[in-house]
Amino acid sequence: MDYTIVVIAIFIVALVAVGGALLVIPRRQVGPAEKKPEIERPEGGSGAGATAVAEDEEAEGATAVAVPEAPAVPAPAPAPQVELPPPSAGRLVRLRARLAQSQNVFGRGLLNLLAGDKLDEETWEEVEEILITADVGVTSATQITDALRTRVKVLGTRSADEVRALLRAELLAHINPDLDRSVRTEPHGDRPAVILMVGVNGVGKTTTAGKLARVVVGDGGSVVLGAADTFRAAAAEQLQTWGDRVGATVVRRGEGADPASVAFDAVAKGIEEGAGTVIIDTAGRLHTKTGLMDELGKVKRVVEKKAQVDEVLLVLDATTGQNGLRQARVFAEVVNVTGIVLTKMDGTAKGGIIIQVQRELGVPVKLVGLGEGPDDLALFDPEAFVDAILESS
Image 1 (tube, rainbow, N blue to C red):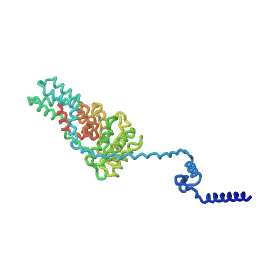
Image 2: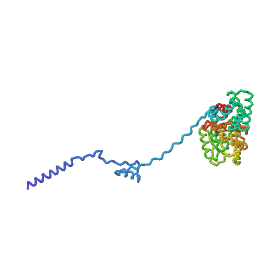
Image 3: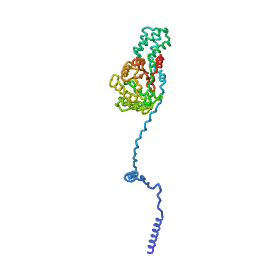
Image 4: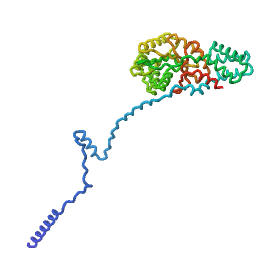
């Protein structure tokens, strides 16, 4: 009995000792790496959107949703660089080699015949034929041939230098270096000089208008371009490109707009800006179409309500020969043509058209186009032209 009580007492003491020890042992601390990461909430986030974001972040293996980037905004196109063209003075001289190459058949053929050992009737007929083939015209060709024949007989000798001098003098006399070939680009007080570009389709009218603007700017002037060719959509764009390159304002309207109205607005813009010159590009017209030609007359009349028309430049393709002369006659009847621009003089041996068109119309050739470059339009210089022809041999 006493033994049992002792055992029970010992057991109770042992339980109490073990229980106290358990109460004294501290709990194990959890390290920072074992802490469960907290989910960040968007600042100020609440509602369904914020809850959805939290749930996506808590989901194990959740796939991130890519947010599409805003479309890139294209950079604005750079403004066209304004060019400073070279001055007009001396352009034809600089282009002499090109002119000589295109006219070498004309000049070399004449010099070879005239410097030959025998100048009989057959030779003189060949001289006249070369002149006619070069579009000098029958009347002028006969006059030049007769004059050369007379002078050769008087001189008696025909050295190469003498022949060259004789031929030069005769060609110059028929080209007439005394004609006024200046292009009027100077303003009249507060009114700009106005130039109308006219001609048939395909002769290079719009290109010539742009090149002429470069000539004026190169000489220190200012230009407004009028895109009055409203029948050809590309014409206004083409003229705009030319204007942008030299910093010239271009007045244009939609396709099919009234050409006279566009021309009038171009002159008004020129007055507003204080420009020295307004160049108006008109639509190409068939010289056989009466209605189109009458419309050209209307353009000129409407412009004259605002300012004086100083130049009406008829653009002709030098390769068209007699057809070009017929065109010139009709245009001269509708508008008072003041000058001729001959394009494509770099690709033809028919430079004699200069003599013929001046003889028939009494209008001087003022400008010649000698290539496709932007500065290949030159003021016509009769002496430089003849020297280039005779230099080719």
